Length: 328
Image (cartoon, rainbow, N blue to C red):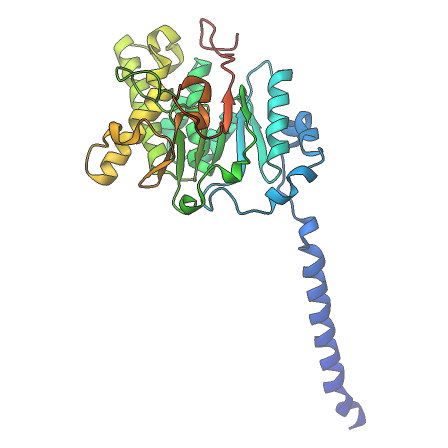
């Protein structure tokens, strides 16, 4: 009886001990200091020091809410066979220093191929077309839309530098919850009325799964197939000359036409470009936030009066512009 009488006390002590030890384990294991996003060492080793800078200057900004609850704080870059130039490396480092909450992923030709194969296995038409393309700029253009559609975040060309306004402040606070795609005019003010207005494509922000980006992707696939049929060639045989204007096929004008087409389908009416041009402040159309020309393309627009800050600067390095649509 005495031994039997002590067993409940022993069992209670054991249960309490297990509970306390379990709590301690979770506190220690999931303490914020242990949490981090795994990074591909092979891709990021050369850029590791970008995160080793003293971020104290931007500490207060890093505590603010994200630019959009729908858009991940991740910046996508793509390098060619020559890798990252010293100048591009400096711009990348500076952008990350100014935006310490953001991570960066630098894609290569190899990792780009692997990514598309993995994330678009449900679309063999996209995988086959992407892997078969022999013109580097066409692949690079398509990759940016695929990455943003699959995971969201921010696409940045290597010749883009960040301004002084933190990325978390790029979207007006009142619009943060609604913005699912953020684009900026490249040519809008100071060009007269006889220009073809287009969104720039060197900086794009997006939430994953944007229907507008899917429209861009599908339109590019269809357009490239059409060029293949016209010239009677396979995707691997398609050359830059056969492709025609890159701006129209996969670049800024394609982005602009497809996004506006997608918006028109959502609204069941054609989007009047005049209603979203000559912008002096951001305009939200459904879930697409359109920024004024000065935001992403300050050097390409001329305003009579002072405007808002340049969020990024595009330096027009044009590293892909050789005769084959590859690096110079």
